[in-house]
Each structure stands twice: as C-alpha cells, then as structure tokens.
Amino acid sequence: MLEIDIQKKLSQFQLEFKQILQPGVTALFGKSGVGKTTLLNIIAGLDQPDQGRILLNRQVLFDSGARVNQSPAARRIGYVFQDSRLFPHLSVKKNLVYGYREMRGIEHPLHLDKVVTLLELEDLLPRYPGRLSMGEKQRVAIGRALLRQPSLLLMDEPLASLDAPRKIQILPFLKRVCDELEIPILYVSHLLDEIMHLAHHMAFITDGHCVAHGSLVEVLSRHDVQKFYGLEEVGSILETRVSGHDPAYGLTFLSHPGGQISVARLEVPLEHQIRVRILPRDVTIAYNPPVESSVLNFLKGRVDSIVKDGSSHMDILLDVGNPLWARITRKSCDRLGLEKGKKIYALIKSAAVLR
Image (cartoon, rainbow, N blue to C red; front, side, top):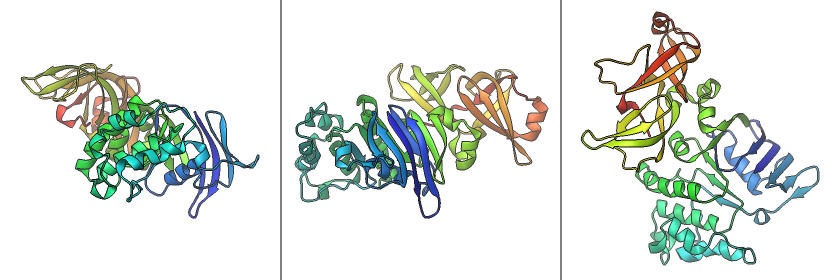
C-alpha cells in the first residue's frame, strides 16, 4: 500500500496529491504536463516535495516534518523510463544483473531465470543494447527493474518511444508482468488503449490535482472526467469474459451482466477475462430488443442519468451492469421520453466494439 500526501510548487501550478493507492496496477492518467512524471520522481526520491509524507507498506520514505528523506537506492523502488537507459557497454545479461548484484544480502523472490523466462529474453542475453530493437530494450529495462526486488514498480510511459506495431508486441509482456507478479505498479500514460489492457485502478490528474480515483471502470464513467479528456475519445469500458466461439461466422461471444456481446473472432480461451471499449456514438437506445435488424448486440439496462451537451445532443448514462454512455440527439431523447430509471435496451454493432 502506498500512502501519499505531498505538495510541490511547479512553474505553472501547485502539485497536490493525497491518496492511498491499493495493490495492483494504478494508472496515473491525464494529458501531458499535468504533473504525472513529477509525482513518480518524487515517489522514487529523484525529486523532493516542498512538504508532506510518503509511506510504502507503512515504511516512511519521506516526511518533511520529521526530516526523513530516504535515498532512491534505499527505497527499493523499480523505475522504468520512457527510454530504456541501458548501459551500452554491457551485454543484456550484465545489464539485467547490475541491479541484482546491488541487492545482495536480500532474499530474492525474483531470480534471473524467472525474469528472463517471463519477458522471453533468453536469445537476447549475449547481445548488446546497440543491437536491440526499441521494444527489446524496454523488455530488458523492465527486467532490470524487476531484479532489484522492488516493493513498488514505477513505469513512466514505457511504450511512448515505440511505434504502433512494437507497442502491440510488448503489451503482452507488460500484461504478463502485471498479472503474474504481486508487485504494485504505478503506470503513467495518456493513452487509453494501454491503460485499458493493464490497469485495475486509475487516478485522473489535471493541473497537479487528482480529480478522481477508484476502479478503472468507475473513474472513466464519471462525466467530469469525460469532459477533461473528451467523451468521444474515452467512451465506456465493459468487463466481460469469453463464453464461446462461432468459427462458421468468425465471431467470439462475450458474457456480460447486460447480455451477450458478439465481436470479431478473438484467439483467446473460454472464460478469459476481456475488457472492451464502446464509444457513445455507437450506442443506440430502444425500449425493445431489435427485430429483423443487423445489430447483434443488445444489452438490457436502465437510464441512470441524462446530461445535456450543447444545444442538439444529450449524453445518456446507462446502467447495463457496467456504466455505458450513449450520445443521442436532444430530439431523440424527447421523442423516447427518456428519464432516470426507465428500462431500455442498448444496441451496439459488433464492429463498433473496441479492444
């Protein structure tokens, strides 16, 4: 558990962050320049707040009142930066064990072999950083951070330097680290696709302040958060599991409390947990399930709230077992007589369901 209560004056605003962050992966989400990296640097001991306290598993890392400020090395925190920061004169294996040797005398729950296997680094061990791709370098950087036996792992946009194909390649490795290792992770990004695949919790930061904190689905369903980033860009996250496949039509069926969701075939096993994202413009509201329609997905729910967006559109928050936003015209809202509590069906095209 990480307890943070700090303040620091920056050039354009005051950074103030007071939260208790739970185990798992917490995404620090927000646009560039809002204080996310500064916060990571403060936690790591690379920067110092003006005042406040930081506790990790009840151990005091920083306390301005008690004049406690542990060095970065003493904090046992792993840090993965945007660039890999590998030593160019050392092989991959020597880069990996550099931090490992520093931790001599401490029991090693994470051994070199386990990290190498986890990140599939076997073939890279004799090579030097100059002969690695950017994605390979980041995998090595993650491995080196893990071999420091960290109590906390900080990741500052670790995929920012990669192009789209390389990001797709390395995301499964990050997912494996998140799922298999019981190390709390703070993950900085302003890209929702990364966060949707990795994070359990989210702290939404703007101008140095945390305006929302909680589960990923909970935070992203809030209209005030949507306003900062843009409802049409964020959309809604639904938690589902794979319930079946239809090879004849190339479909996969996802089970959800509101009903079954059909999507293009996914090569994943049954019962696998899947998060999907749906944009508000792709949600149609009806009082009855469709008849003789091309739409395969209709989720049963009710109207939770209605927010006016300008003169012509309305944002409707639906409860279908998860929060689901729909953006419709004001005329459609009036014609349907929508109001809080009314039972509805949310209609969604299979092609509109994003992963």
